[in-house]
Length: 210
Image (spheres, rainbow, N blue to C red):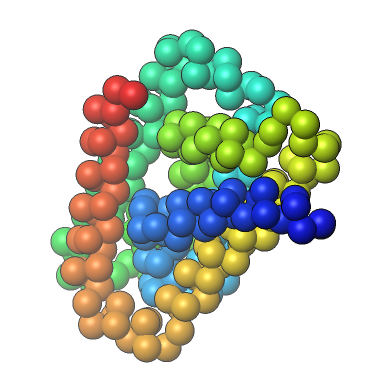
């Protein structure tokens, strides 16, 4: 990658890191699973989130996202599906927070197997219509009329590596011994916080009009 291309893509990478590292439903879910289930399940969920993000990236790159934004009905369906899904996670997390003991096979409203956690992570991101709008902004920021073809590959490839670093980093940090002990002592408060985050995000998505 030459210096001019790196300078062109640096704002893209910075914007992507800020967006992915900021607290939100996906990161909170990864943190909760890391503390309650451990490293491997959290990494599986994180990889699902990254996959969902890259699906939106490919849609934005091929121009299909323009169709979604042109037809309001498509975004309405995504908003409703995403909002209801987040409210479902909020209900599961709240029920777990209200229980006296943590069920071994359930944590933060998510299933036990790594494959199911991977699919849930992907679904969590795919049902967020703001993600495709974010990727359209990133593509607009990084692509110019005279950009060579490999610029698009550099955007997606670089963001894949950054996404894995950020989301898997949350999984690794919050699955350490001290974090797990914090979870064991404050499980109900943590899962109550997760329920609140999922609930607020779900209602905001259902009420989002832009």
